[in-house]
Image (cartoon, rainbow, N blue to C red; front, side):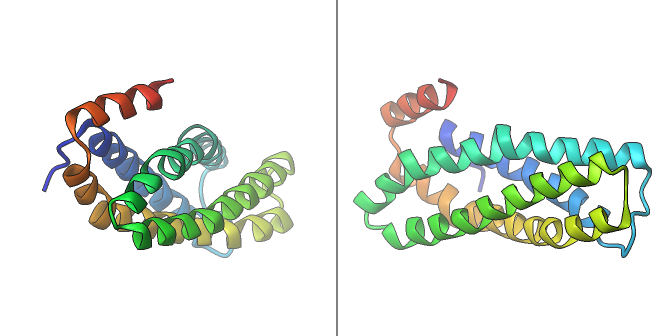
Length: 161
């Protein structure tokens, strides 16, 4: 089923984008040593860092500040709590990936920097993808049934601010 509300549609698009990016990241760090063109890897890590700061964290903030209280009010607090718990873990992984990617890029593909990047990047790729898929299966359909047109408009204004 396609998302109906603008809020659900915007979150859906962000989920698809992050799943695709995490697939690229997971594929890139799946080998024992970097076997990807250094320029491509630099671009990927830059994309990941940009997505973390510009998309993932604001996405989480919006959900936590706006959507999760609504879920609690409407009797879906268990889902909100589960997603919020995952946000904590994923935020920590985001910080670890940003820090290790910075070291990796500064050291121009050293084996030590690759080893430090590989574990958190692999875990972030797996967890964030699974989290986005869980939100696609549980949160998006629920939002379409909970949000009326006025709430949808107001929430989209908040997202744009």
